[in-house]
Structure formats: C-alpha cells, structure tokens
Length: 137
Image (cartoon, rainbow, N blue to C red; front, side, top):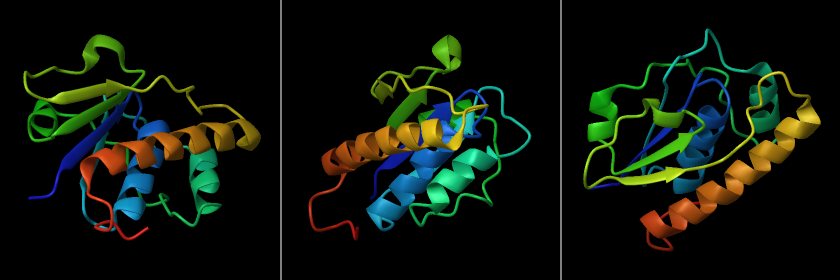
C-alpha cells in the first residue's frame, strides 16, 4: 500500500499545489498525493503555475479545494503550510509544518525561491517515505 500525503495551505492556490506537483512528479506514482486549503481560493496562482512550468511540471489544471477532515484522516502524512490552528489533528498521524512564504502577490523571482525551497523539502520527505530505487525521478 502506497503512503498518502496531504499538503495544506490556506488558499490551496500556491504552496500546497507546488508541493503536490513536485511529489507527484518525483515519486513516479509511488505516493498518493492530495492537497487542500482551509479557505480555498478561486484559482491557482498564475505565478506559481509559471514557476512550476519552468521545472517541467504542469499544475495549471489544479483547482483549489477545501481540505476535509476525511482527507486528514485518510492521509499518512499531513504537511501544513501556514494554515495555523485550522487543520484538524488526529492521533497517530505524522504532521509537519513547513514555514514558507506565501507566493500570493510576489514577483516570479521570489516565487522561484519559494518553489526551490518546496522542492528541497519534498525531496527529503520522499526519501523518508519511499525506498530508494522505487521512485522514478
């Protein structure tokens, strides 16, 4: 059974979508990836889409979604990114809070730095979830 990771940020329009895009790509399908927001936005941040496209990852079709209690319960790992205390906590789950700047309203150069930080964190997360050689990166 493959591990399940849920990425959560407030609007589910930037950080969590970039992290989900990286984990889907880098895991080669070895991890089930979900993302959601505590107050989902109307659309994906176009600068985040542009920054990820530079990496060859298309998140343009992603739609911000409300994070649900059921998603949290069904996930092995829950990564929060600035959603504060709104994320439900269940015993036995692995939680991490990634302190990342919100890319909303920032220029591409700053979003690239956030993107690169997210990639580094996703690579470390993936190394701890999936044995080497299983992912196709």
